[in-house]
Image (cartoon, rainbow, N blue to C red; front, side, top):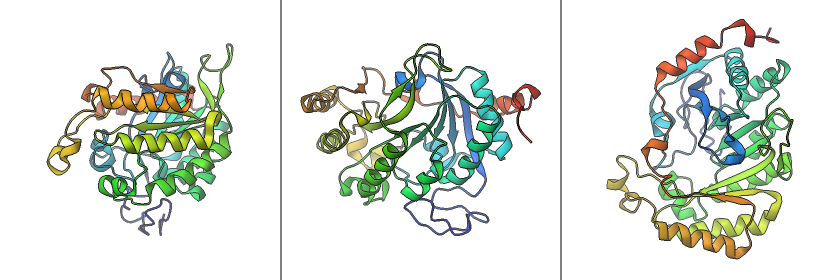
Length: 318
């Protein structure tokens, strides 16, 4: 944390004293922890994923739906043991997994907390939900601790990734990160009846998400072709239509000021099916809109933290 090179930005910030490019210091900052029902069926299931949303982000896409926390709103600082209690509380609520959302700038701290949580009784799968813009060396700190990787593959074109995320190296970084994720997890494995989570929940493997952007269907096709030709059935692919224009985007990026059209999305899906893609997910209509963005109000989260101090979920902690 004193000369941070954790992410591909290599900003070198002393995060013990100041914030890095990710707008985070060395203390883990969480904006929300709750059961979450809007992931892919193999992640959420009926009971929901135990989603923990972290503040800050190393990628900073201009259209980010969680910008309230990725570049703005402060969350709650948690110690290792407090984070462990959150994990165990979500498990006690029946979560199908612990879904760590945008926690890549806290990987060393998360590795420490996950190790402690597993010793304290965490048995449900751990999902690492990320942008895809990660260093292999950082991901290696999570080996044996993360069961499922849920990365984005956002851009193929360096021009697009430069324009929307100031990261012209995005694809070259993301493809190496994905290879490491697949190496760690192996092919997809799903829970059967009678296991600790619902049948059909992804308990091991990598599921890659791609959000189709308005006006960028050619880029989407290149990404899907790369993923399918490279990995075939070794990964799952989820093609999303839920792009939602956020406030302030239209002025700077007029092409992003509208929702994705049904025609654009269907063309991308038809292309994927034409390649032979079968193992994956598509979205139905009416999945774009602000109503699908999580509520990051602090009150409910603080109540959960208070509940997490109860003795019944403290077992195994020193």
